[in-house]
Length: 507
View 1 (cartoon, rainbow, N blue to C red):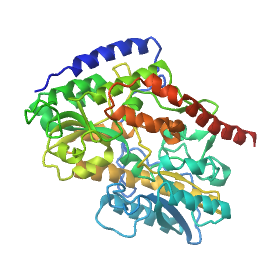
View 2: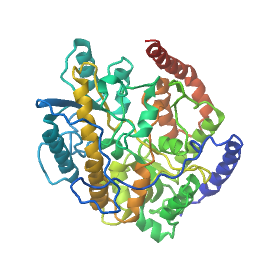
View 3: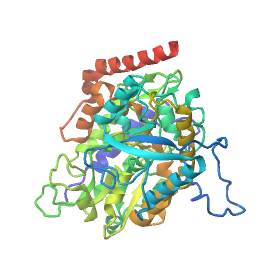
View 4: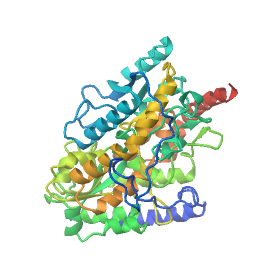
């Protein structure tokens, strides 16, 4: 067993930083009065009989209308040949042609059939390459007045070029008057993160599946947990003590030089590993964001303040510690999935969709929210990664926005009771996770989903550079210097966006 020093090192850092942060108020706590989200879910289906104690089904506020077989055509993102059913997009979320035995696909098919029959519409989908082909198609349609696309579903990372050019209707506007963004099937955090100057051009809702799939979590090996007599993580989550320190303390115990060569390599057992996102997961999980929206609808950032720099530095110390965290860009032959399946990693940082790749894992594993910074934090925050999520918008080239808004609201309301439960209950519980406690964890995770507009906007390239330095093994890095390098670019980026907001407000 290699020498274990990170626990003491991290404890000292955490103690010092906690004292600094506690003296600055509740910056890491989130809004006052927040608590850990409830784990309740909507009822599974409209067709199921309601018991006397069941909560009544929430219905969309839609008039009794029918249309003339109007086509509602969605332009949906994909990644080259990596289409539906693949690692990037495991599940259909807008249009399904037929039953195929997959619970999510079948729920989408039934949802669409119900809405199509009830309102006499047809829902169709076309796929286009994210970030390149899809934005080009939308911008061309807007420029020429082509009404082919009723709405689009794109990764939030790639929507920047379109929304800044004013390509979409305001989801709160009169043109889409049937959308009721106060209903529970619209994700409140996405609305807060992506409403600029009172204008909301894109948002997440329960019409979609990939936004849930791309939520950051921590998977853990129950075998290593039992063998090493580690903490009961579910109890830590429930009592609010699942923190950075708890993760580091338990991970350290699992580090083991299996081949006895006195060097930690891909052949050994590690405390934690992950893709390129652990830094963002932990930073946002602490209750801070890379950029936020102020009360007047303008974007601002505090990544350059002392608290944020200290947090980034602390995350970096955790990520570069050679016998604690194995990063896949550092150990090229390190297969995240295979290593975790072999129970040679205790904690795996990834998004929820990783569970879909673990269906054939022979032993049990569990799932946890991203840990809090410390016990003073009032709730968990699970970041939705913008490079694989789905978010919807309605192009201004759509010449029948009222119809589209009507059908979107009907589809989304129906999804709240059909597609979302199918994804949650059947896919995640029936096929992937292995214990009943994970259901409660998933309830907390999905109700803690958090969007960060700073990740979407890029902050003048700072986010790309932060990813590299926070996750990769570059040795000691002074994040104050890193921020100073990008400070003017960050300011220029925010100023450009805020000028657009000024223009909207002046109209």
